Amino acid sequence: MRNRSTHMCLAILLVLGSVTAGSAQTSIEKAKVPRSFLQRVTPKTSSSKEKFAAIGWSKKKTLGLNTAAVVGIPGVDSLVNWSDQFTAPGFDSTGNPQSVWPYTMVGLPPESGRSVTINAPIVPVTLDLLAPDGSVAIYHGHRLSFQANRNIVNNVVRSPIYQPWIYTSGVGQFNDQLMRAQFWNRITRGDDGPNHWHTNVSPVVRHRRRMQIPFGSWFFGVDANDVPEFALVDGNVFGSLLFPPTFPVDNTTPIGAAELAGDITTRDISTFLFNNVYLYDGTPDNCCVLGFHSYDFEPGDASNGNRERRYVMNFGSWIDNGLFAFGFEDITALSHEMSELYADPFVNNETPWWLSVDPVLGTALCQDNLENGDVVEVLPSSNPVYAIALNNRTYHPQNVALFSWFAFEAPSKARLGAYSFPDETTLTALSPSGLPPGCNLKP
Image 1 (cartoon, rainbow, N blue to C red):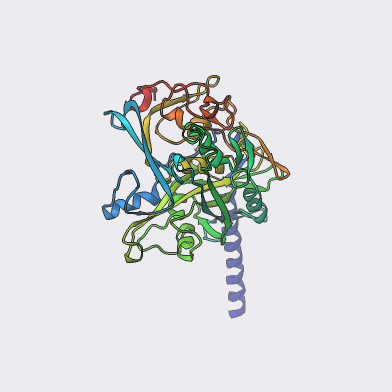
Image 2 (cartoon, rainbow, N blue to C red; image 1 turned 90 degrees about the vertical axis):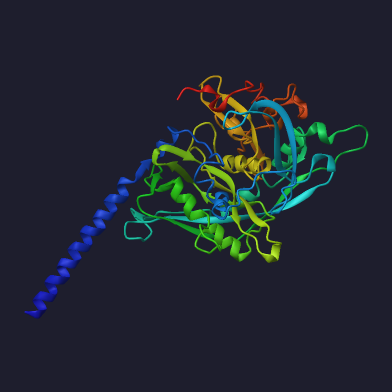
């Protein structure tokens, strides 16, 4: 009798286990989207002030340290930077008239004629999508785990972000030549000889980190063979799991672990590299954010003179070819975020309100910050990406707006009188000036 009862219990447990596994698989199946899904969405990056991009730097508000940008950024432990200002009529974010606009950028001032090379750690991140029971979800025998593997890392290191190429402004890394092109009038003065002002980065690959997304906060896409190819993640959940949420910092997040291990420092430009991981806001219908730049705030202590620490970073995903429309591939998102990081490392460079409108499709964006990639990413009919053949492959960095476009300078003071880089034909005219907050765009 005891044996029969034992056998019956085992049989019941096996049936229940089979039902549970089947239910879990059904739940996972419901989170699947086809590859064609990404062709229907608008690829974009996140404004540095959006909630999930601001998690790192907004933490300082909890300590009452809501500092504003000033020339020289005193009292801050971070990467090398320089400050200046321009004048142009406009309005601040609340609608008050403003004509003087301070800004801070990476590196040294153009007139210095001095070069700087900034350490640029790359932290590969493996992202796991978790099943209801907390294990890594499995779809038809494939773990839903997306890894920025060695091949992807090598392709990024060998890309124009870190390697020299020939531009109209000279030979160098993408963002070094961007900086030289936009401040061309300030580095070519008189007959004093060549100006050796450069702002370079030196890549170094750090320890791999892991992020796990709880069930209910993700979807995934499959290729033509029904093999998992990309992950869609709730942006707010993603941000909360990327940045360390507490003081003092712990090692439960990729950024926190990298800080504690010394893999990234306040003097660096740090990249957290993912593979085909894209963010949505609330529902997948509000997809897809391909990257953002920000910094993680940590309080100072006696060892650094009690200066607040700013770990300047960007999240970007390697993009498989053909996933998105408009030529967004490989390093498009990474180049976008790195360019914006150079232009606005502390995510507080306000500008007069500007409006960017695609002349064919009518897509539009209105903002009031120095986010040079955002201007172009909404212009799908105007060559948003620039093909560069380098190291036996073709890369697709994004064209970006130059400083003169934000300063409403006519004519442009940049190299060749351009408003965009590296393709000078992407932007040929300024935004309307004197725009109020929101640019009077209809909701």
